[in-house]
Length: 534
Image (tube, rainbow, N blue to C red; front, side, top):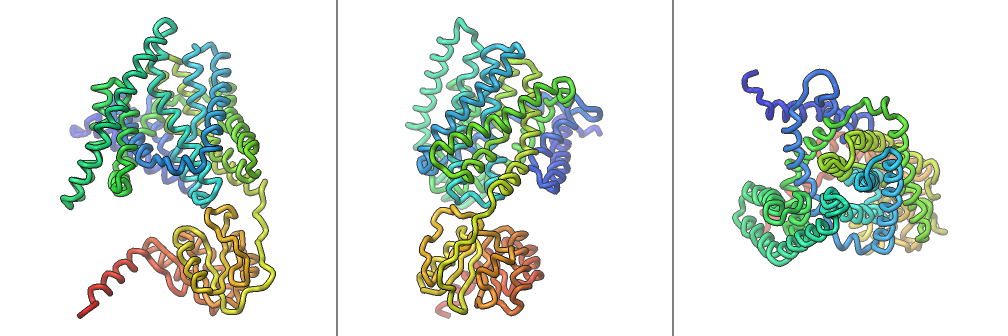
């Protein structure tokens, strides 16, 4: 083991155990993030066996924070935020205030300082970007009104936490110097922002475009990473602001470039790897003994996260006139905490704003709330039954098309069928998908429900349909629909979409007449074009 240096041992143990526990969590239909945190607990100092180097873990975690914040900035969308600003901005602010007050009240009863109480409350107020986005995508809500509100709400929370990370060090200055410290911090931040808007806004996109024109994928990927890490380091070295703020602004400036999507895709593997190491390092800080030693405080912490935040969000959304379904979805989406909470927990401990006990409560609350989050969404489905299928008065003509799913692909197919005035039945699981057609004439019918349900297929008049187009992206869900449809109509033409050779085989085995994979169709079209004029 002479080559097993502490750094190599830390990375190998962290990634291998994170994979093992993450895969196990995924099989249990939990967020893999739980597995990453548990991997950290296993290699941490509070459990027997191998103990990783905490100092090295913290340094790797710092890189993880930089890349996480760069990713947040890269995906920051002013357009998405402005579309739901009337509810997302005031809603997020009120919800953060309520959760911070509840967390601060618990902290004050435990004798912590005012600064510690505020930081503890803030850590309980912000939801995990990773968990929320995966939950919304998993429920196929991203293109719905409630999905967009949840994402906009999350953007406001992230911006508030970025500001908090800048101002919290000033709280550690004490009551005497807090005013001067805040003024100095704000001045430094203002100087950095001005520099980024005046200089960075011109240099960063220009440099990236110059590298893109070389045609080297390797250089492009390296340029993006150099921008993220270089700006973050420069922000700290020159302006004395946090790595997190520097990385966030680097991503936000880069998001305005047409190359932002490519930048996000090229850096995703490295960002994911260091994000995993970040979660592992956070798990190393967690002392499982808190579950026994401080059971009551942990229970209250979880209640604030899962119930306090959710009730506040539900009431706010309802006050804005949204339906119970929308309010419950937003409440469930926010009933967990994650990345920013971990950063705040580590920062609060390093600045001696609160004891290690507070960090354990935050980490324990995060683990439990993330485990409970899928149960929240399951409860919503029980509390709010699916809307009954909307059926137009006249039945569709014989030989109609049935389209399942109104995402990017389903929307294009449906629009074409409508333009050609082809009779169509559109089945969509979510009634509030943005852009869903409202015309209920004799050519178009809209059914809301699960297309794998035989009753929905019966309503769609599957027996008289000429073709079924399954446009949902998830192969498991698509397979269920194909299997049910083939059972109901053995002679029906069924076309499905897929993203891999395995998905193609899976869908064809269940009864798809033809399965279309994007990469194959692109290649086929390119080949066709090469034959033109020969």
